[in-house]
Image (cartoon, rainbow, N blue to C red):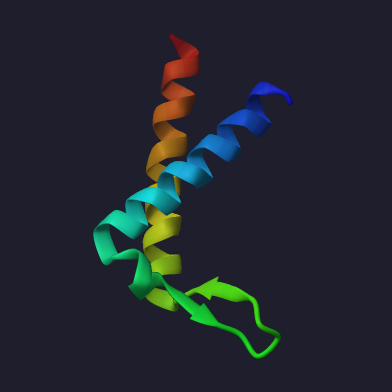
Length: 64
């Protein structure tokens, strides 16, 4: 796995953990008709914002 893939994976895991911490794990998921789960719209928006912040910090760290 290359560095960029690792950063994406790490950022996704961190963002999901922080969204769950902020909103509560039971509040961020909704069931789909096909039986799968997806983030609620509010959780998805928060995930995106947090993911972007994490990516900025990871890029800064790589430049050091």
